[in-house]
Amino acid sequence: MAFVQLADGELHYQLDGPVDAPVLVLSNSLGTDLHMWDAQIPAFTEHLRVLRFDTRGHGQSLVTPGPYSIEQLGRDVLGLLDALHIKRAHFCGLSMGGLIGQWLGINAGHRLHKLIVCNTAAKIGDPSVWNPRIETVLRDGPAAMVALRDASIARWFTPDFSAANPAAAKNITDMLAATSPEGYAANCAAVRDADFREQLASINLPLLVIAGTEDAVTPPSGGHFIQEHVRGAEYAEFHAAHLSNVQAGAAFSDRVLAFLNAQ
Image 1 (cartoon, rainbow, N blue to C red):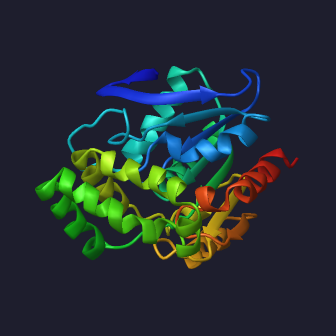
Image 2: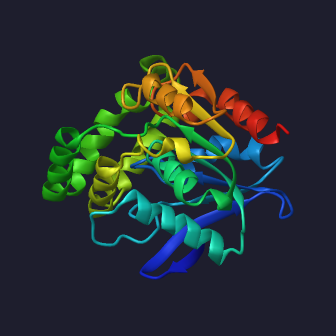
């Protein structure tokens, strides 16, 4: 297991693929860890050096007192790149990871080659959604995380996928039950407070926006909004709910690689 030392703790990461290939950073969704990308690794590492990490508050990374902000999480990514002596990289983030990608595109575009944001929006939900969840998780702790896990299957996957692939769905949703309640609540606050609607036009990078047709958490309308506000942005949509990389699998991987490999 590999860690980099940030100012206030350790960030857990994993590197796969050829050492001389371009670097692609993968950023997980709220309530998962770096293994949410396992299905992509065989295809991606044929062409890329893949850097995955557990976002602060998740997996084996540091859990510091909340609330967090997307800027804080974005600066963690920059700290990771600095520690590994990576000047520039591609970045692909899903949901909360997509918010981190937007922050990086707006504020640190010089560190990126190309940007992919998946199943996300410039603003996700509102305090009426997030505040009760934060309160419940902080009050009930691990029991609340188990309840969230049981409810997440319907949000993260379409019924046909979870019925046909119960082991894959369970593997992903079990990550939520294992997430630190304090870390999860702190990251909920980061998502609650993020709003990039007025800043998207300042992204000056090749951008691919990916959405899931059946995503009730971040519907395709949010992806279209991002595409329409970033000059030259591309858009792709798959039959999937919130975790399109898991549900669309090879089709997701192929579209990302086509975007990254295009001249």
